[in-house]
Image 1 (spheres, rainbow, N blue to C red):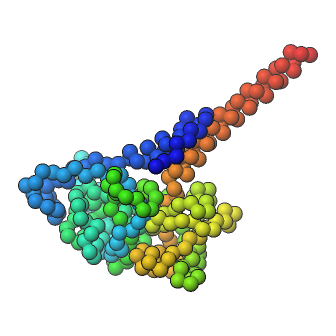
Image 2 (tube, rainbow, N blue to C red):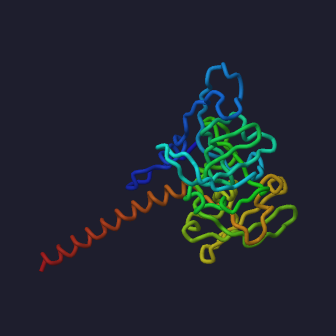
Image 3 (cartoon, rainbow, N blue to C red):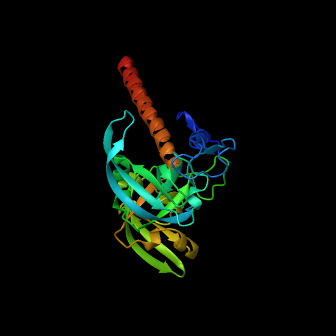
Length: 285
């Protein structure tokens, strides 16, 4: 259920924001076997798969097979260009269940598109913007990565709405245990910190986490991982000083944009009122 709360003058409601996110799904059809493993009877009717985004609940830790530059990628017009390709192995194969060419898989929180796959491995292309915004360009053979398939539109979301559109990278500043739980402090740019609030959501390397402490002036926040989570995601394996992908809660971004539009309108109205008052004062003289 979503809170319906009209923001007067902002021309947008939280209900509309939720709808924007929920309706940002992909209607795709699983193609017949082509360049990959068919998941089922090739003669069966093609199954419609409706998926939206991600939940931040990591399904499996995969392993990087290779990160290479391909100088001979075929482009849309038949010409040849250079691009970066990442190949990842899914030890259990669960990430590739129901997969197809064009399927979305989040790698360390980055939404990527499957171009080739088999029972345990898949290949994706990495755009220059992806390499600039995320830590995927730092990967090497054998490195672990968080993996999550995109959610079915009617699927259960045990985390929060994660787009897979990484805003920037942050840096692990410290790691400390309190009992069996692990405190992690992350430094982040001020452009992202304005969306970080205590007890709010944030995706770190694609993992949905609850923010604990926030220090906006120093530019850091903390979160805590219980023992179970420590065993299922890549963040605890990283050293202090390592980078992590960060994605702020999309609802916070929409709300800020809406409120900013409202503030701009109020500023205009205040100037108009001041002008009217000044004009009235001149007339009364």
